[in-house]
Image 1 (cartoon, one colour):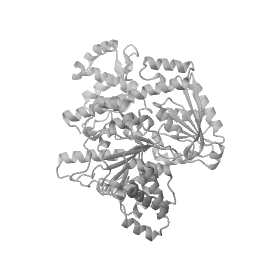
Image 2 (cartoon, helix red, strand yellow):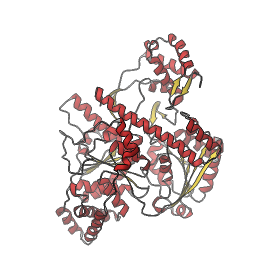
Image 3 (cartoon, rainbow, N blue to C red):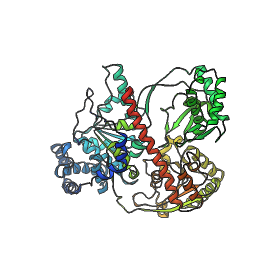
Image 4 (cartoon, one colour):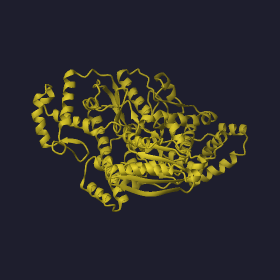
Length: 633
């Protein structure tokens, strides 16, 4: 990465980093070994001592004297990590924060800001004050002339964090703004002109695509963005890893689906519904539905009855396997929901709705048909990019999250970002209560119901599941027993902050999909804290141990008491769905026999994590290849 400096702002020549193609073997080397060899220790002790010294001096100044001091003492961006100059720059902003909010930032928050200015990804536990640490880094960089983008995962978090920033930036004579999905195009140019801008990853990426499209259409078009100088990415593992390879596609309304295409899609969905599992269709090693030899024979006999020209070409096989995916691969409540008569995709990494995304032509329409909806017109793609490519264009890229440890190899291989773990300010009181394995799903849910009600007599309970369908099914189990619960999932985004705000009250039982509500702290009522704090029950097999840590990390914040347990059944989708490798079958058998069950579960998750990492690597290489040949970005 480049060193931090005041990159010139210009719409004619927006600052960005030239993204060089990544080679397959280089990626594999850095993932397996490079990040271990090239990681460097943080050398910040001298800067920290200088910060402490200057901050003590500034505390003695009156408000008028502090204002004059701020005017007379500016630090160059290149010197922010130099003890003498950087110590003063930090101390000035820390003192402004103290006077405006009454908060003295802790040593670990200061260490977090230092790491961000070095272009690192910080791992800091939930509740340790990452929002203020990011604000500290953004204010220091902006005062040194560095245009700063703070990236969050949703509008609520962007607005909340910006609200905290407003008085701090005003005291330092810095401009700031927030962009949400309600911000108009007319307002966006002014927003990008400010020193510190808060918005979501998707808004930044789609504005980049709109600028590219308009530049192609007219050389006179004025772009929205001023460039990509310095980015601080909140929930970095979600943005830079989980959601990174999903193409961000800018579309325009397309033509109505032709009658002959609609007829073909209906016929293929019927064929898929009538196919025989294991005989005519099966899951391949990547978990995708494929036709067997017997299935191909059935299709060969079926295809001549179709009037569509594709029925007489090899393309009919691919379309038929898409129909298999539409019928068996994508479940309502897991992969999508139906809202106002439309299929709305669910982001598998965050559990949030993605109203701006569609599957490819044919697949999307066949999912609609399988869900008894009318097939909709296909949108025409005018520009696309993955977040991997977009964020690699920043001259300085930094991030922070509570769970980055498992992502260290990928973050280094793709973004050249080191992960810097920073300790909590207080020892953790979070207690693990082990793993419960049940043979049957109904036994698991009966235990969850009984245990949650028992614990909630004195404390609060968070029940974590994988997707919307499981959340709704479990809510029905509680409802049948006459127990009121709150449900925090992709369907409740508008009430997210309110639901999280009540989740720490005594007697509260909250069911949440694995990342719903992420970025907001569950604050405990005093009586809940005294009784033992929040209890987290992880009741689905998560795709990785990192997702489990994200869930149980909601408890035990800032030294609070808390506990967690994992409860699964051998009928859980994480065990019975998808490709069944011999290793996975062996680990499932170990779970069945209750032999080292925690280790066996971690092996299943590691195997799935490895496969997901391989898919992300292939997606990045495929995007590079497409860009080289057809320049589709």
